[in-house]
Image (cartoon, rainbow, N blue to C red; front, top):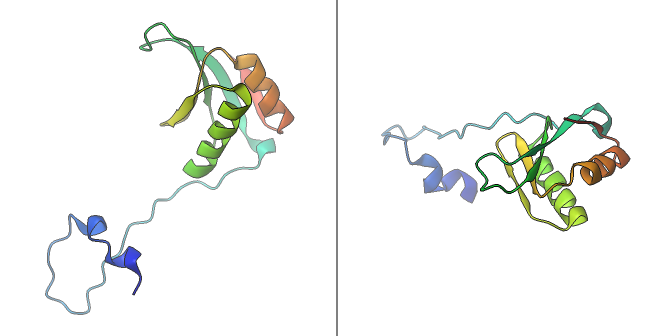
Length: 115
């Protein structure tokens, strides 16, 4: 028996069915496939709005799966030696690292633009 299909947390909003042939179907997220690095056009900006005056570097425009976006964020955090996160459509790196991030991404084959 596959535990994924029997996970009660996935079925919280399902009404009880007396039909013995009923199969609960989990909706699959339609994530975009990750484009190759050469086809990615990333924008690098600085931001300090609603951050207590602290500056962060934002990377936007990444097209791909959430896991690939998190991997890219982890790679940038490691190479810059700072913290960061992925929120919504942005990769957030703490501090002013726009030039260093631009160099890293360009070396990895991404098309970048500093705004």
